[in-house]
Length: 78
Image (cartoon, rainbow, N blue to C red; front, side):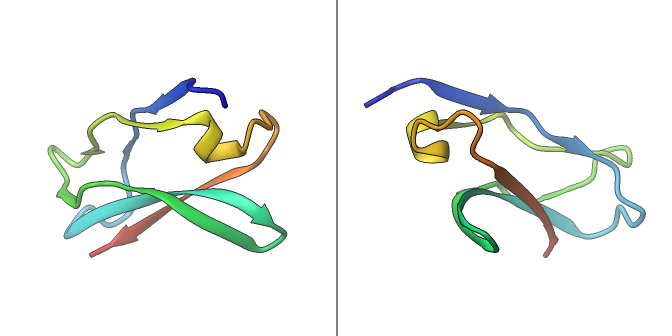
């Protein structure tokens, strides 16, 4: 089993910077079928920018050792 880790530092500006936002990182299982593997903290924009803490996930958890496997990041407003 591979213990390599990937780290993500996500920032974004949205058309509507009000409210609280969070995101999910999802791994691909089959066409149209994804499994959430990480949920970010819920936060408000600072100076119009959402900047989440760095998050990490093992590559074995994200892609089952297939470096070409798709991941999906979805943003939500709380």
